Image (cartoon, rainbow, N blue to C red; front, side, top):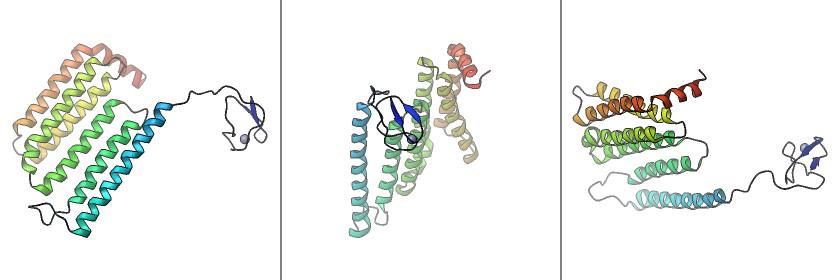
Length: 222
Ligand SMILES: [Zn+2]
């Protein structure tokens, strides 16, 4: 075991520096306490490469747009590089979340879909296809998302049934409320989306009720 001469503690494993004060440890080391994570190192290289490519794309885009004055045909006033920046941010956020350990897949996917929808709305606003977006694209994406959550809730074996159920229900309720307050008459796709979510929620509670109850007890300590 190595020792820190300043903190007067013994440090197991193969550390060279004291984890408390960063001084050099004395004595002979042992086998490492923690396994080396080669996979993570490899992933981190891929992550850096794609981050570099994203930055390059962004800078080239902004240069062409603002300095060279290259515009999209049909949209002479649109600064397309700002939209490019927005989408790169969405993609990078999604990738970052995938690399971050310890967050559940339910939260990751939900966050990414919401961000994508937000990016899509901004894009639709500038390109003028907002109506079809609000009436069809967003509710379809949400319905697909909610369905995915309920499928995951049904097949889950890791005690995350509730997380998927709540994520699905939250998506449906939030979108339903937004739709209710922004429109006098709910478009068909939105109504379908809401109905799908309620039907699936009921189904999941009926078929996986025991798992849901167990998870509730575990998560809320009741
Ligand atoms: Zn020390």
